[in-house]
Length: 183
Image 1 (cartoon, rainbow, N blue to C red):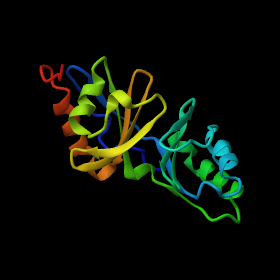
Image 2 (cartoon, helix red, strand yellow):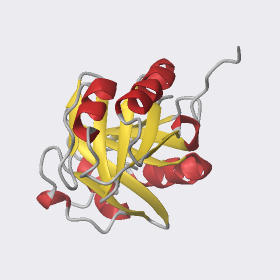
Image 3 (cartoon, rainbow, N blue to C red):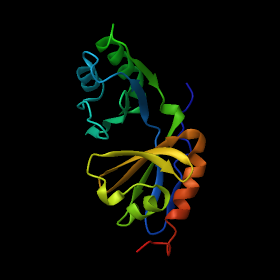
């Protein structure tokens, strides 16, 4: 069995806020219309969370389920529990139109922390962070690439495609450089 490695081997950067790559995390992209019979129960069985409302994330311990679009959810579980979560989804949604795919190795995850962590994101994303409510997920652009983030535990968790992880880490590293605070 090969060793599981995160996209950037746990890269870190610091300045007026800190950035670190976290992971690997188990991630499942679940495509299903919200009216699919048993969807909420399947998500709860796989993650322990409720079915999230539009633009929301539900968390339970280290597990989460984020609304990504009208028929897409991102389920987050420990990396070694993805196969079990996929089996649970297949069982609970048997006969229902859905698609559940392990995307763990196709994503990179970063954590921004510090009193001014929001300023790092303000420089990169055209999103009003002052209006970002607790438990809200924001899908947006980070400079020129797609990403999603949410606030939790005094910081932000950011997800992007693994193929652009180095670029995003570079953006974040530059964005948190001491002396470049916005206010």
